[in-house]
Image 1: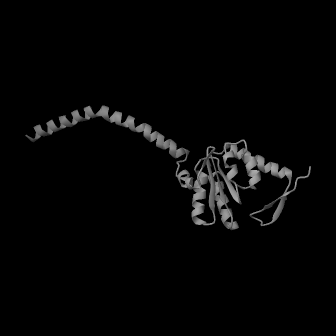
Image 2 (image 1 turned 90 degrees about the vertical axis):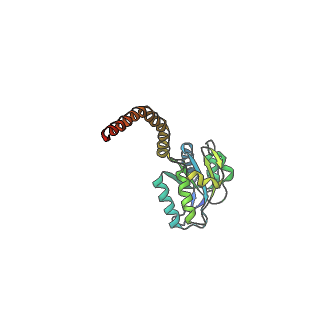
Length: 191
Protein backbone atom coordinates (compact mmCIF):
# COMPACT_ATOMS: atom_id res chain seq x y z
CA UNK A 1 0.00 0.00 0.00
CA UNK A 2 1.40 3.37 -0.99
CA UNK A 3 1.37 6.04 1.72
CA UNK A 4 2.42 9.50 0.55
CA UNK A 5 5.15 11.06 2.63
CA UNK A 6 4.22 14.02 4.79
CA UNK A 7 6.02 17.33 4.49
CA UNK A 8 7.03 18.87 7.77
CA UNK A 9 8.88 22.11 8.22
CA UNK A 10 11.76 21.75 10.60
CA UNK A 11 11.80 24.82 12.86
CA UNK A 12 15.48 24.66 13.66
CA UNK A 13 16.97 23.88 10.27
CA UNK A 14 14.31 25.49 8.08
CA UNK A 15 14.61 22.51 5.72
CA UNK A 16 11.79 20.35 4.41
CA UNK A 17 11.89 16.67 5.22
CA UNK A 18 9.59 13.78 4.35
CA UNK A 19 8.26 11.45 7.02
CA UNK A 20 7.83 7.77 6.39
CA UNK A 21 4.96 5.72 7.76
CA UNK A 22 7.21 4.34 10.52
CA UNK A 23 8.23 7.86 11.57
CA UNK A 24 4.59 8.96 11.65
CA UNK A 25 3.69 5.95 13.78
CA UNK A 26 6.58 6.70 16.14
CA UNK A 27 5.43 10.32 16.55
CA UNK A 28 1.83 9.23 17.21
CA UNK A 29 2.98 6.63 19.76
CA UNK A 30 5.28 9.11 21.53
CA UNK A 31 2.64 11.84 21.81
CA UNK A 32 -0.01 9.31 22.90
CA UNK A 33 2.25 7.97 25.65
CA UNK A 34 2.90 11.46 27.01
CA UNK A 35 -0.80 12.39 26.76
CA UNK A 36 -1.83 9.36 28.82
CA UNK A 37 0.19 10.53 31.84
CA UNK A 38 -0.11 14.31 31.39
CA UNK A 39 -1.98 16.44 33.90
CA UNK A 40 -2.82 19.24 31.47
CA UNK A 41 -2.39 19.99 27.78
CA UNK A 42 -2.22 23.19 25.77
CA UNK A 43 -1.97 24.01 22.09
CA UNK A 44 -0.79 27.37 20.82
CA UNK A 45 -0.40 28.90 17.40
CA UNK A 46 3.27 29.44 16.65
CA UNK A 47 2.93 31.23 13.30
CA UNK A 48 5.49 33.96 12.72
CA UNK A 49 7.80 33.19 15.64
CA UNK A 50 11.55 33.27 15.23
CA UNK A 51 13.76 30.26 15.70
CA UNK A 52 15.41 31.96 18.69
CA UNK A 53 12.03 32.49 20.38
CA UNK A 54 10.96 28.87 19.86
CA UNK A 55 14.34 27.64 21.10
CA UNK A 56 14.01 29.75 24.25
CA UNK A 57 10.48 28.38 24.79
CA UNK A 58 11.71 24.80 24.38
CA UNK A 59 14.51 25.37 26.89
CA UNK A 60 12.12 26.86 29.42
CA UNK A 61 9.67 23.99 28.92
CA UNK A 62 12.39 21.36 29.32
CA UNK A 63 13.47 22.93 32.63
CA UNK A 64 9.88 22.91 33.92
CA UNK A 65 9.13 19.30 32.95
CA UNK A 66 6.82 20.23 30.08
CA UNK A 67 6.74 18.06 26.94
CA UNK A 68 6.69 20.36 23.89
CA UNK A 69 6.18 19.14 20.34
CA UNK A 70 5.20 20.47 16.92
CA UNK A 71 3.04 17.80 15.34
CA UNK A 72 0.88 17.79 12.24
CA UNK A 73 -2.73 18.13 13.36
CA UNK A 74 -3.89 14.84 11.83
CA UNK A 75 -1.13 12.98 13.66
CA UNK A 76 -1.95 14.85 16.88
CA UNK A 77 -5.63 13.87 16.60
CA UNK A 78 -4.64 10.22 16.15
CA UNK A 79 -2.28 10.41 19.11
CA UNK A 80 -4.93 11.96 21.36
CA UNK A 81 -7.56 9.33 20.54
CA UNK A 82 -8.05 7.01 23.47
CA UNK A 83 -6.50 9.44 25.94
CA UNK A 84 -8.16 11.95 28.23
CA UNK A 85 -7.30 14.70 25.77
CA UNK A 86 -9.34 13.42 22.82
CA UNK A 87 -11.61 16.43 23.47
CA UNK A 88 -8.89 18.64 21.95
CA UNK A 89 -9.05 16.90 18.57
CA UNK A 90 -11.69 19.13 16.93
CA UNK A 91 -9.89 22.28 18.07
CA UNK A 92 -6.56 21.48 16.42
CA UNK A 93 -6.38 23.75 13.39
CA UNK A 94 -3.45 25.62 11.91
CA UNK A 95 0.22 25.46 12.89
CA UNK A 96 0.16 24.45 16.54
CA UNK A 97 2.67 23.71 19.25
CA UNK A 98 1.48 21.05 21.73
CA UNK A 99 2.52 21.18 25.37
CA UNK A 100 1.81 18.57 28.03
CA UNK A 101 2.43 19.22 31.74
CA UNK A 102 3.83 16.00 33.09
CA UNK A 103 4.74 17.08 36.64
CA UNK A 104 2.47 19.95 37.69
CA UNK A 105 -0.82 20.80 36.00
CA UNK A 106 0.00 24.49 35.90
CA UNK A 107 3.56 24.39 34.52
CA UNK A 108 2.68 24.49 30.80
CA UNK A 109 0.13 27.25 31.39
CA UNK A 110 2.72 29.31 33.28
CA UNK A 111 5.27 28.95 30.50
CA UNK A 112 2.77 29.66 27.70
CA UNK A 113 1.28 32.62 29.59
CA UNK A 114 4.66 34.25 30.16
CA UNK A 115 5.78 33.54 26.59
CA UNK A 116 2.54 35.00 25.16
CA UNK A 117 3.14 38.24 27.10
CA UNK A 118 6.54 38.62 25.42
CA UNK A 119 5.45 37.49 21.93
CA UNK A 120 2.27 38.92 20.40
CA UNK A 121 2.23 36.31 17.62
CA UNK A 122 2.03 33.43 20.12
CA UNK A 123 -1.66 32.71 20.79
CA UNK A 124 -2.98 29.92 23.02
CA UNK A 125 -5.81 28.16 21.15
CA UNK A 126 -6.69 25.06 23.20
CA UNK A 127 -6.50 24.35 26.94
CA UNK A 128 -7.40 21.04 28.62
CA UNK A 129 -7.07 20.02 32.25
CA UNK A 130 -7.43 16.37 33.26
CA UNK A 131 -9.31 15.60 30.06
CA UNK A 132 -11.74 18.53 30.26
CA UNK A 133 -11.66 21.22 27.59
CA UNK A 134 -11.31 24.78 28.93
CA UNK A 135 -11.38 28.11 27.15
CA UNK A 136 -8.12 29.79 26.10
CA UNK A 137 -8.94 32.56 28.58
CA UNK A 138 -8.51 30.02 31.39
CA UNK A 139 -4.74 29.91 30.86
CA UNK A 140 -4.18 32.56 33.55
CA UNK A 141 -6.37 30.72 36.05
CA UNK A 142 -4.57 27.46 35.31
CA UNK A 143 -1.18 29.18 35.63
CA UNK A 144 -2.11 30.49 39.09
CA UNK A 145 -2.91 27.04 40.39
CA UNK A 146 -0.45 25.95 43.07
CA UNK A 147 1.98 23.19 42.27
CA UNK A 148 2.02 20.00 44.33
CA UNK A 149 4.38 21.26 47.05
CA UNK A 150 2.47 24.53 47.44
CA UNK A 151 -0.86 22.69 47.67
CA UNK A 152 0.49 20.34 50.34
CA UNK A 153 1.84 23.24 52.40
CA UNK A 154 -1.50 25.06 52.11
CA UNK A 155 -3.34 21.94 53.25
CA UNK A 156 -0.98 21.45 56.19
CA UNK A 157 -1.51 25.08 57.23
CA UNK A 158 -5.27 24.59 57.18
CA UNK A 159 -4.98 21.36 59.16
CA UNK A 160 -2.58 22.86 61.70
CA UNK A 161 -4.64 25.97 62.54
CA UNK A 162 -7.39 24.24 64.61
CA UNK A 163 -4.81 22.25 66.58
CA UNK A 164 -2.87 25.41 67.46
CA UNK A 165 -6.08 27.14 68.55
CA UNK A 166 -7.02 24.12 70.70
CA UNK A 167 -3.62 24.10 72.41
CA UNK A 168 -3.83 27.86 73.11
CA UNK A 169 -7.34 27.41 74.53
CA UNK A 170 -6.15 24.62 76.84
CA UNK A 171 -3.19 26.67 78.01
CA UNK A 172 -5.18 29.87 78.62
CA UNK A 173 -6.59 29.04 82.12
CA UNK A 174 -3.09 28.28 83.43
CA UNK A 175 -1.72 31.45 81.80
CA UNK A 176 -4.58 33.52 83.27
CA UNK A 177 -3.91 32.08 86.75
CA UNK A 178 -0.21 32.90 86.43
CA UNK A 179 -0.99 36.48 85.35
CA UNK A 180 -3.46 36.89 88.24
CA UNK A 181 -0.94 35.60 90.80
CA UNK A 182 1.74 37.88 89.38
CA UNK A 183 -0.65 40.86 89.62
CA UNK A 184 -1.50 39.99 93.26
CA UNK A 185 2.21 39.65 94.07
CA UNK A 186 3.02 42.98 92.46
CA UNK A 187 0.14 44.64 94.33
CA UNK A 188 1.34 43.25 97.70
CA UNK A 189 4.93 44.29 97.02
CA UNK A 190 3.81 47.76 96.03
CA UNK A 191 1.77 48.21 99.22
